[in-house]
Image (tube, rainbow, N blue to C red; front, side):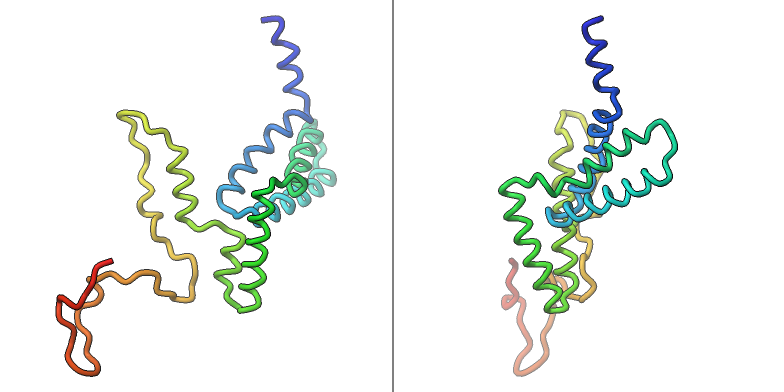
Length: 176
């Protein structure tokens, strides 16, 4: 047991503790944002947090908070190859959405779709026998944009068609 005391002291150093605690908000931010949004949000939170910490924090935790916010602020500096490709795609979606004034596309380039978030949460929930996870079914079909785009048509919504010629018969309707 005495051999573990130096390791515990090492983890309690403000710089190391701040780096470790910084991983908690990183997980939350990366869960709800795309790679481009992740880099932007982490950098903004880190920069603003460092400014506030240096100006107003007079406690003994100032060094730990400096380490935490600096870790968040410099996450843009360590992208993997997959992240770089994803950031490029997100950037093209963002610029294209802004050019076309399609703000749902531009917003979608920064924030994950709710279905992706729900899928990530479901994959992290353990599947133990007898374990009942909370239901996420009500999050399944949350509309993301406000431009009233039709995303799916249910056959119950299409009953008759009155226009040119005869109305549709029941065998004209096709389920997908």
